[in-house]
Length: 442
Ligand code: SAM
Ligand code: SF4
Image 1 (cartoon, rainbow, N blue to C red):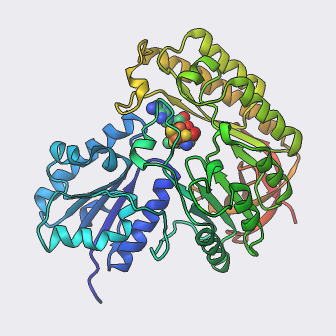
Image 2 (image 1 turned 90 degrees about the horizontal axis):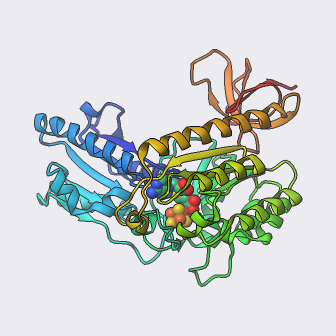
Image 3 (image 1 turned 135 degrees about the horizontal axis):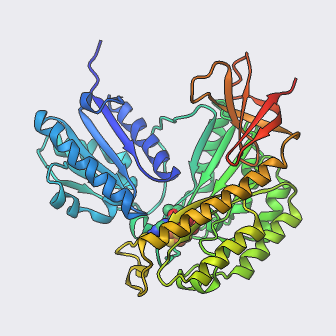
């Protein structure tokens, strides 16, 4: 048996990072590595990082600190840092943690062999490979996907929006769309490999194609993907409200494979705060899009991202956030405490909100959202939904499976037959704020 050096990889942050890690693993498996969950057995440790909020960054630096011991015991072990924090901090990482061997960004995944050789063969320690490529392509990079049912497809990278709180435009660079033909061929390949669902990723999918010479808009791309045989469901994230078009609403309505779920980050319920956030819409505009979506698409689920404690957020501003949540009734919300990021201009704003107050507001909002989600889910009891089965019970309960409705709600049910990867009909018998419980029909 040939010896394969072991790779330990830990991923922080969003789906984009998780998908980048799938490419990193694919590339390293091609180079002869095999993966391990046991860091002490690894020859190569990679941390794929996020720096959207300070807390995650602290967590990553603390893990880098712990890895020092492993490297002291075994100096041959390599430690590489990639992802957003690597791009943002670059040589600062070596200053804080001299035991880190190399740093690279997602554009450099296909250069991993060269990067590792530079460190190992040529002793080029503290190696940085963070150049952005002029075009965004994932062609020819092998990928090791975590699921055999649902696959992420990155359609664009970077962001041009410069929301005043956010580091992403600085870490991921300007928007770069992937050519439509490359995306379509990836989706066709996935269909041939029996994948049922594709999940399109980008920081602002609505501006897909703006930087390309071809005239395929995001709506057009969805229509083309909708024609691929074998793919049953199409999801996408994230949409920016300022670019959400009526054309897209029409496309979602007309293309039956596009799931009835839209994730539309609101960020705040106060137009005053939205202006300071540089979001380029106000609450009336946001509400009008929600109305337009609901008037045109039946039974659509709407989820959101929201932040509390942006600098200068008063009690009145926060009350406006609570009020709009009651009015819109989101199916789910990802709630965040505003975190000061040094590159982002909001960090220079006066009237920073105290951590105590931020926490109080966060809990108020979470409690409200829980109440709303529970209310919405209660209405679904007794109804029948098509569910794509994607997991066996997390708690190892015999015959228990879970899957998702088109509206992205998790449904738990039992079946004696292994239904992973199947589309089945389930009648909802019980609900909580986060989960539906059902019985298999037929
Ligand atoms: N591009 C997406 C958009 O426009 O909404 C989201 C990308 S961002 C990585 C994901 C979420 O993190 C944002 O929607 C926002 O709510 C949150 N976020 C970004 N910067 C933050 C910060 N400095 N503090 C707290 N939350 C932040
Ligand atoms: Fe960050 Fe705003 Fe870009 Fe989203 S749209 S990634 S929140 S700058």
